[in-house]
Image (cartoon, rainbow, N blue to C red; front, side, top):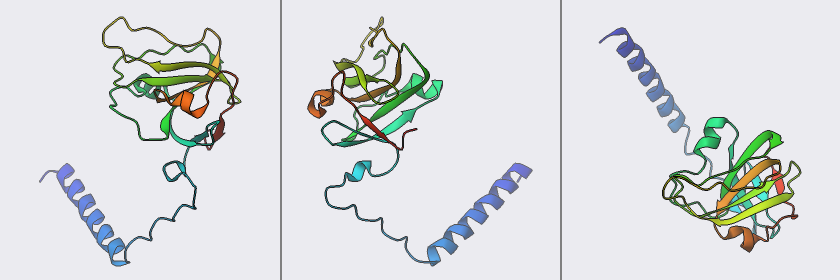
Length: 167
């Protein structure tokens, strides 16, 4: 066994011992039960409160790599979930739907959570060239949720979304 193999074997052994020791302490405590009416899928981490009162758990896309990937290649989204793209400073951000498998509602926001523009039921792009979507003015954030949900949640230009544990 070469030196790298010896180091990896030692690390594996230490991990096995640690996992056995932790397991001997008993089972992990059960997760706390959400209170009645709480949105269990959106109870922790970054969330957005919709005008309807629904709470959506959001993945954050902050880095250029995360923003370039976005929701590409996903075949579905969990209920009450989405992705929030964050930009600093605010500027014009046009989005496209290349390699996106599902229709999305894309919502452009200012830093305070005010909706500036909505592209509803934006269709996936099946072949180049793909269309660009978005307002000509600056935005701080863009929220993507499953197509059709913006109307269901009462999202339109001028409405406010509340950010929880986002920034």
